[in-house]
Amino acid sequence: MTVPESVSMPQGQGDSARIVTEMAGKARRAQRELAAMTSAARASALCEAARALRQARDAVLDANRQDVADARSQGLSDALLDRLAIDETRLEAIASAVEQVAALPDPLGTVIDASERPNGLRLSRVRVPIGTIGIIYESRPNVTADAAALCVRSGNAALLRGGSEAARTNRAILAAFQGGLAAGGVPAEAVQLIPTQDRAAVSAMLAAAGLIDMIIPRGGRGLVERVQADARVPVLAHLDGVCHTFVHADADPEMARAIAVNAKLRRPGICGAMETLLIDSGFARAADLVGALIDGGCELRGDGRAQALDPRIGRAHEGDWDTEYLDAVLSVAIVDGIEPALAHIAAHSSGHTDAIVTADEAAAERFLAEVDSAIVMHNASSQFADGGEFGLGAEIGIATGRLHARGPVALEGLTTYKWLVRGNGQARP
Image (cartoon, rainbow, N blue to C red):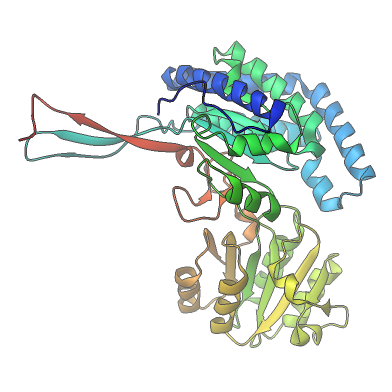
């Protein structure tokens, strides 16, 4: 889409509006250059960016130590500190993820379908970049590199606005990444980080119709709802992960225990962590299951029947069923079969990831068919809700809506298509 570089911004947003306007204009110019590059050139530039991230190890880790120290002094929970923290192992994983994106098949130019009309016109739909994408995110500094890599590989420019708690880390990662891109021949303006933490910058991004082609919010419900309510730019929503696991009456007890403990406690602070456990009243080992979670360090809040399983289970209040704890806290309810389990999930799921544990194939197939979430699982931990685990490389988020892209959003989700029409002189009568 061609638009003027000088699209005006709403009045009253001051310096933030000016900053976003100027950065978006540069991004659009860089995106045109990026999209014209060969697939091999974009992949090579990403490998240079990964190399630069490794070389900047000391600067990134030092910046992250300062961010974590500030966050701890401000009372952030252990789960949120875990999302924020980077060590050498995680930094290597970030760099490796960039290389994995570089190695993925290039979606650009892929022919989705083709046909020939009776009049001889030959039509095809091919994948093209969306353009300039704004990503607004919280806590996780790895998103800076993941989002940048995915946008570059798919020919899009990225305007990033990270959370204040990770500001130093984001700047260090982005500086290294831009240096690597420049070494690989990609204009540094193809990936930019909004330099201010002023909330007015978010408002300016949401109002930048004609400069930013799509906004992707990645964070808590408050952020996503604000973006959806205020945006004048199309939004690819990543809502919170109120994820359920339903342990059916015919579940294998050891499997159910292993899946539930992993789904909740492997990393409680990620969006694919289980937040509600539904246990069929016909499941014979329910007390053992909740006991394993409590012994693993999880606080359980349950309905009356769940509380009867173990005196250590606290009382769940109505709001618990709709809460993404992002911590070692779990809601537990006893249900009388698959019908009330499906009803509970329909009422309280955020549409992210929901799972059933059962040996009954008919029950599993019904669950897979009737649960309307982006990811629905059978006999697997919800913590597999991840682009890398799906073979997509790094992801920019888990889209919980129903339009354009759904589930892990990787390269294909960052493209649109255009029609190519080839004729030999046809004129419409």
